[in-house]
Length: 85
Image (cartoon, rainbow, N blue to C red; front, top):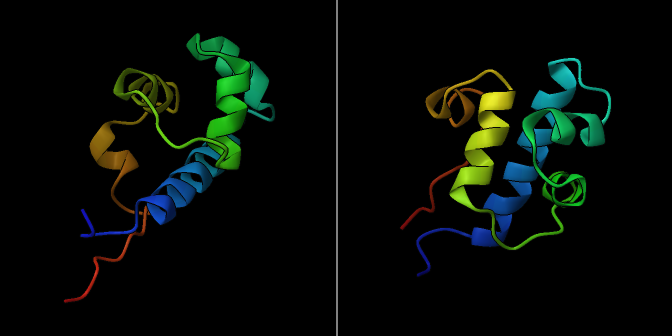
């Protein structure tokens, strides 16, 4: 451990999810959660950064609901600088 800041990564992940959801026209995290069949409380937590883990299956549902591939989701717009040595 120690190659990158996990907490900072999760904050950036939260912001990315929320920004893309709004950009796709979903005004409500609750309605988006309903559409992709995940917990609305969970979705709220993922967007506010109130989580310390996310299941891969859940993240893939979110990415698919945003009509993206994982590569698109984690490429342009998901800025995460590598830790310098």
